[in-house]
Amino acid sequence: MNAPHAIDSGAPHAATVVARTQESPTIFTLQLRLDDAAAQAAYRFAPGQFNMLYLYGVGEVPISIMSDPEERDGIGHTIRALGRVTQGLAALGPGDRVGLRGPFGRGWPLQEVSGCDVVLVTGGLGCAPVVSVIHYILKRRERFGKLVIIQGVKHADDLIWREQYDRWAKLPDTQVMVAADEGAAFWPWHVGRVTELFGLARFDPGCAVAMMCGPEGMMRAAVGSLQALGLPESRLFLSMERNMQCAVGRCGHCQFGGAFVCRDGPVFNWGEAQPLLAHRGY
Image (cartoon, rainbow, N blue to C red; front, side, top):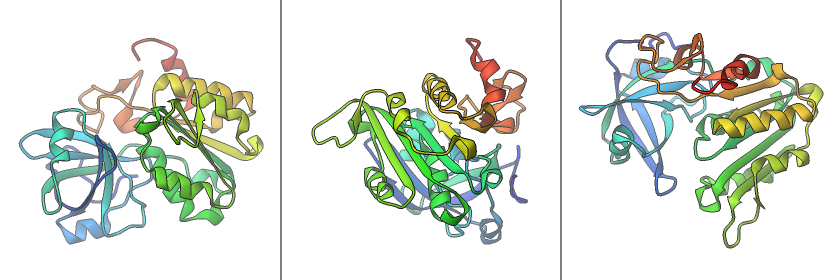
């Protein structure tokens, strides 16, 4: 649910960069704080939602929120420098200012799956929506069952947060599996397709939920593997990516059948997404 102060189509809130981390040659994380102290204190979001970040004089882009919902000091965003706006954001450092609208969209159904095993599947570099779930669960470990993390990348060098994956793998009731289509020297994980790992996943399909983010072809393949393991359609969720510009379902750029990814997603149940993904162009 959007926070009480969240702005729809109005002017963005001013925010200041309080910290910057270079995650890889093209990926960085910005920690932002709203300049209005009351707005920062009131800001609320659910994992899986996103903000619109506005680079003054350049433009606006949707970015998933990385931080924990209970963190009050800053709002984290992990960004890949690809286009004009994100490349401009990459040049920012502490003290620089941006505009922020949000939060927007529908997040992951974490409240509804309390007590269940959680299987997280992500492919490529777009893993921020799923990493936010990992942070959420680990801070509330007693509310959930086993945590299974399955990550796939094209090349071993594409994996960011490598130390975090190592640390997560050592935690109780936590299984971490990583696959790279192309390995590298001293690569400790699987070389091959990420879907080859599903047969090794340890979870109870009778009380588990899967949350996925990444290339649509990978997610479709993952759904097939998870259904073969006994997970029903109702417990499969995907975070979709589309060209979101207004964030409130008015511009039509992110239309997904009769829905809008910005307003009705970005998280969809597989039952909602499957009929549309079956048709090229949706």
